[in-house]
Length: 308
Image (cartoon, rainbow, N blue to C red; front, top):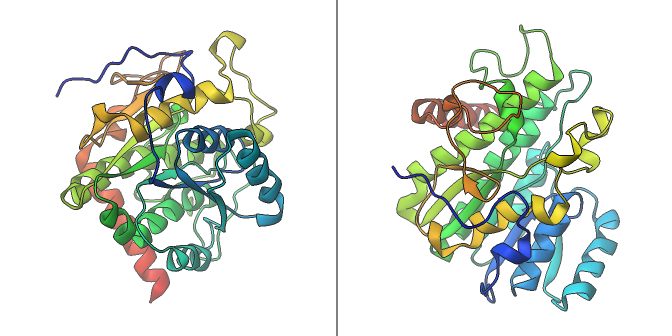
């Protein structure tokens, strides 16, 4: 399998990667679309003509963001929908309210390095529940809309943090393993990459593919539990640069029908045999098909158990 390389790179922006792209008539959902790089992701889609729904926890706080996006892009088709990824009822309500096709689902929302172990009502570790299980449940619920679109794409935001840990299949919720904030975060971001592998393997026949992206180091509220962004200045990105890989993976004709891959700096990442000091590349365990199958089965089991 040939690794995908592009003329873009570390400093490329959303404007660079979407030049010549027209998404008029396409419908996009972005989780966490009213904060962090979600805003620039939404702005870029709006500028190329897409209808954009910001799926957010706090509609009141997101309303001014949506209004600013409409004003700055001239695209009035920017909508809000309430979605709490740690609340399965909220996910069901969001999906039930959706009508018509969905061309791109961007699993952008996330939490990072919670200092203390927090759990959902189901007893699930909060980072795994929010960053993976919530998005898994959302994609399952929106599958008919994605299939109706034809050639739909799911963009799964991973992170170089996945290099901290594989999925801890025997104890993903830290019932036995002592809780560690970055171990939990790493697991959740490995799950994001494996989700892309599993979706493509199962849903490509329905015209749905998925790839994972590593946005890069961008100063946002995501780092509120870590004392702020600590990446060296030369390795930091602007929000427009950070959202570029997402936009490329979501819109490029080069990726038609291609999924199950991991991109960083707007190129497919090389496989890393160990975690280096620059935290680049993708770990083999994050692309392993057997791991992806196991995670899919575990996720379905957890959701089924909750519904029983």
